[in-house]
Length: 154
Image 1 (tube, rainbow, N blue to C red):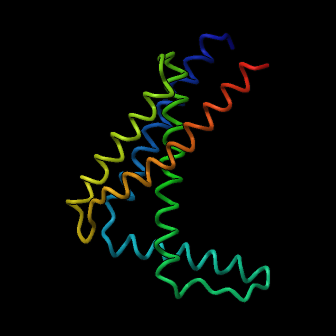
Image 2 (image 1 turned 180 degrees about the horizontal axis):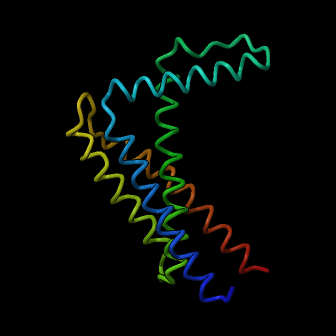
């Protein structure tokens, strides 16, 4: 296989992953508050099961704080990943200033995602969630910055 074909396949795969990830975020945001709450409960049950494997006496299922933390960590994970996926897509497409543009795109998508939730049953758009989303994206951004500097220092 020649390099041009590999390069095109890489670009197409990057676009597919990018669209999939945007769709996944949209799917989660489009769930009603009740369905979203049940998803959080399933995650808490899973974490409890893992803790029990290690003979832990900790039971996190009764804490609303645990649910809150898990939900916010999910926000951060989704946007940490979105930043990396967007950055890599921009790398594949040879877009300059991709570090900053990927961060701006994450801000745009987080904002529109919260606006979208204003129209979903039993959900609400929260500016705080945009900030939490951006914390995940910023962690990825700084990771890419550090990696770039370490790579250029060699």
